[in-house]
Image 1 (cartoon, rainbow, N blue to C red):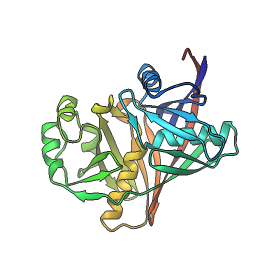
Image 2: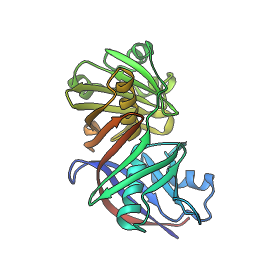
Image 3: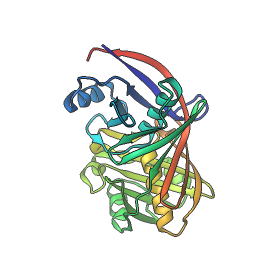
Image 4: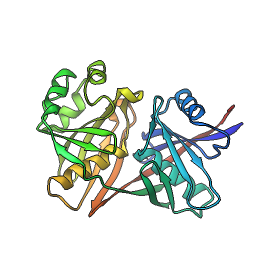
Length: 266
């Protein structure tokens, strides 16, 4: 038996947020076992913390269908567990892209990650949007995180909210693992994220996609910036991500709530 913290990350005060499972004792679990647990829990992601004699704890991240090298809400949730619950001595962890510093203050956690520079504008957003019944993009980009994220900008937040995506079409298209649609109004962004190939049709809050957005903004000449990203209302779990970037790093933060602790027979 081992326990699993069930969190909601990037909440709007006490409401919404993206559910996350955090398993703090992964002793004896191989990759297949972790994937099976993540599929059974069926959250957008489940994280497994691995402890070593030297160095920071390592975090492995699984969607219901695949392991991810990097994802925002699992890292923020893991940071909150490590810094807020125990052991309280860690201020960094590692994941598939390297070392991730973090800080925890009360019910808020923030992680710092390297910002990708592998960004290019693409015309494929128009064909993906047309096939999947999404609004016609103003612009679109590929941002490799390292998984390629198709970032689609649309003209108005109402278009983001009213879209009714064809998930089968998204699954068959070139951005089946990560399609991020957003509209910006000053320092606020309304966004939605679709990842049917990863077993997550629509995600309530996606920190890695917010990091991709920061990389896109930097690519477009905004070297320093700060945004609040609102996501998830369409799934019934409204969420808010604090996003800042400068130079070669991006910061992802928000509030975390603990819902329960489950005991797993694994």
